[in-house]
Length: 64
Image 1 (cartoon, rainbow, N blue to C red):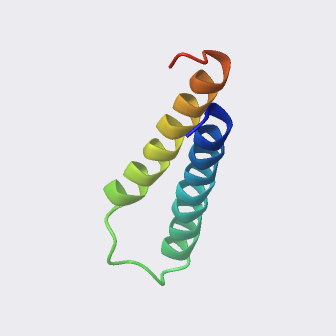
Image 2 (cartoon, helix red, strand yellow):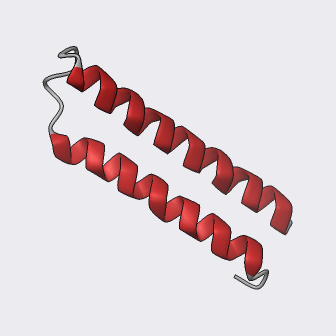
């Protein structure tokens, strides 16, 4: 795998995790997914932030 394909995959994972976290947060706010604890939502959002930072670092530092 070359650098651009790895960065593309990381960007896709970032988008998926962020989208899922926001969607679950909105659905929980409407009262549809009330059984999910808030910690799960925070883990999704923090994982998205971590993957986004890793993707950015991988893009600017090609040896990473």
